[in-house]
Image (cartoon, rainbow, N blue to C red; front, side, top):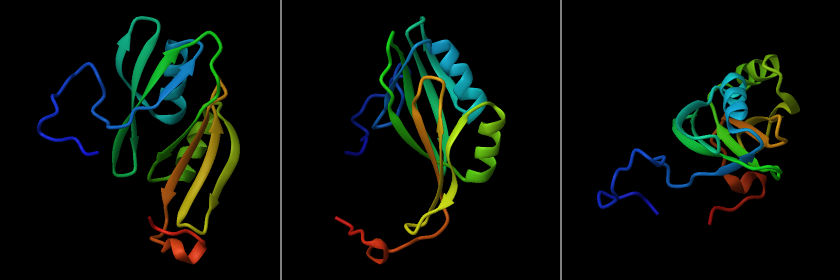
Length: 141
């Protein structure tokens, strides 16, 4: 589904078509941590229970909404970025737990995975080559 001219603009909701909601114990602490460690930018604060974050990545940006929850279940989000190694070094220096070091994969991506203080898994992916999926066992649908 692609946004059309018929869609109304609304400054109260992110313009992304898909917006992951990530449950966190404290939206303000999580927002500050994600900004410092991963470079996310707060977009809209709604009291003490919700913060929309702008995620700037490879070729554009997207959004994620932090939702207050007394017992958040861990989630997993992938973000495309331009410099996996530099991003990983910055995240590590900011206290991120690096679960998987930057690694090249046969499908043309270099990725690393970090865990945030609420236990969410963030995989950051940099495109390093345009690879035909058939060469590594995939198939375009």
